[in-house]
Length: 305
Image 1 (cartoon, rainbow, N blue to C red):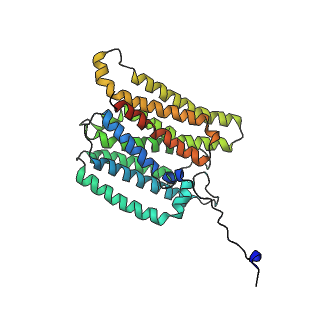
Image 2: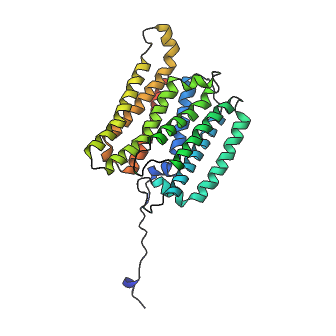
Image 3: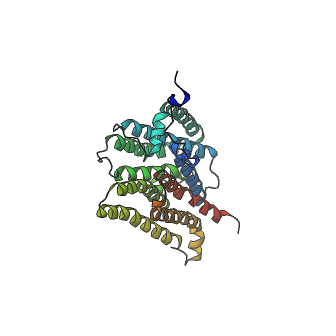
């Protein structure tokens, strides 16, 4: 009989996951950001009231889309290399049955809420949104982007689809046409912020893997220049009509919105400058925080003065 010291021990090599990573692992980060920005769109477009069903259905739909995307990504990874960069994909692969059941239930609940509680005009918005989602998944499955390269087309489409889906649940109650929303400064600026948020992680990882100084500089410029332009546009829109008292009264409701956009762009720039201080998982979480934190800035404009 072997002695106690000779008995082989089984050691679990997987480290416990930090608590702050679980919203990302469970795909809850994107729904929370979407719901926060739906509130911002509601107040910016002065709806007065937006039914709770709009918030719940948006959160559920965004969660389902992100779960499906991460399950597809996990299934398509055949290199056998542990997915350290995107731990959420490994987590979804390990719990794919639970996520599949949860997404099916969430889809049914969201469908019931939309059919029973949303105005008829929502179907036209949803039709366009489904085209964007279908195009996104088509790019995910059939993309020819080489492994390790930044999938710009997919990221741009994902960012705009996210922004469109968030804004449409508020815009459908304004009485204006879909085309008014598509060309609105609010949707365009929020869409750009979402695109840059998605691109940031890919660009950071691409630059980390490369030893080429020119590639690193190109990746840096690909993020900092659009963020700077977005910040400049936000500043322009916040003070564009300040000289006219009547126009100021009309446009004041958009000022907090563009201050929120400016905050998001500024935080992403700040994170970009200090990203070396954080792990890759922390970078991903903080990139989402940069898009969620402007909600607090927006709320400060609504508080009584």
